[in-house]
Structures are given as C-alpha cells and as structure tokens.
Image (cartoon, rainbow, N blue to C red):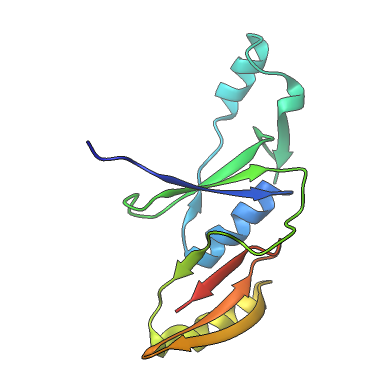
Length: 141
C-alpha cells in the first residue's frame, strides 16, 4: 500500500502565504467551493467564524492548499497558527532548479518577498537558504 503525503506549514496568514508560494512554485491555490462552505454553515456543520473572505472569495479560515500543475506532487497545506515562527525549521522545502538557474531563481524569489539567509555547499552541491515572508526556511539548489 502506498501512502500519500501532504506537506503542512503553519502560518499566521495561510491564504496570503499560499498565494506567495503558488507564485514561487508556479503552482495554483486550490479553488474555494463557496457553495459547499455556505451549505455547511447553513446546515450547522460549520460556523461563520470558521470562514473568512480572501480576495473577495469565501474560504475556510483555517487554511489554503496548493496543488502542482500535474497533481503528481504532494499537496502543500498552509494551516492557521496563532503562533509566529520562533526557531529554525526542523523540516524544509528544497527547490531544485539546477546550478545554471539558481541565481536567477534566488533573485526572483527575493524580489517577490523572500529573504536570503545564507549560502552553503558540500562537494559539488551548492544551495542558497532563503526565508519566505513568514520566515519559513527553504533552499534553492
């Protein structure tokens, strides 16, 4: 039996961070099913407090998810957390773009709101560690 995985990232503003990562990865934010959300509230399965509006669309307050264009990669969920990031990530994403694209990709992501943290290498491998707008570390290799 194969196990599907989902990568979940805590965020104080999950919808905004999902938008940022969708742009960074060239993926898309999963669309909201407003009719379903309204029906869940109307039937008492959810409350208005569990919803919010993001970019004029009714969404679940607790999070937003990304899917890859080919849907063959793990889903990435940005989940609401009241706590801001407070230490080094124990797990992070690596974006593999290749040595010839690395500098251009780092420049693009920094221009979009990432912050460069450090550069490192080991043998023939090199990478740049960045932080997304909420401070979550990720590497570009």
